Length: 338
Image (cartoon, rainbow, N blue to C red):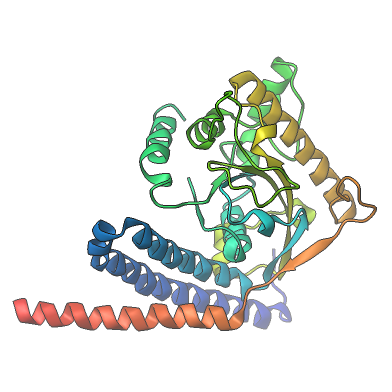
């Protein structure tokens, strides 16, 4: 496509801005990630003496790293509008987020959404075995609360044709805005984390009793991400910021774990139902620009997700000051030794 004389200055500025953003993010990563690693190393004695406190501190620093990534999109004008149930009400409980997957930018979007909510990390046959071992050996001991899961197992554009062919062959729902989910990872997570009552049924919270004291996984948060005009943001856009400011829309629906079947066939059917609902939600959004009202409500209510500029400044300052401090410490010991 030919560039007109009028467009040249704008494209030039866009290129300069993209290069400046990229340079800052490279420096940001070169400072923040090594500093995080140095803090984790120096805190290893605390891990031995007080493991719970160590993982609490590590979780906070890890969240700060995610906050830096979220800020890259925030300052490019990539914001989030939240719909459906307010998941802050269950942010202190253990939960799994089931999310549709369209592009690499989905992860960045969730990093932004989770900054004021739960502390968590995003986690086929060998991979499922590794997941099972991780949940058994590390998840609880590190006091993790939330797991983000993409049950489709890949991006929409890559899996849609295969999913539709599988659906047609097996008389399953034919979906266009999402793909049929895989149940393997979901089943492993539920089996590992859901606390069983004496009668064998899963213990878990009730939507009307958010102060439940029962242990184990308590909530499934069905999360649907929608992009205007069905044009998802990828990680390159998030980093370089060459796309115009965009509002990404995220819809939540909370299910108590006691309402989720644990047997393989029943769980698969339940997951299919959730993704059929996602299909309907996205179809409505692409037609109207908004998600439909929740059951029992006449109007859909949205909430703008915001990040504090002061908080972003503080964590970035901490990262750069830490980087400067560790550089000097390492340089000092290097000169002493060599």
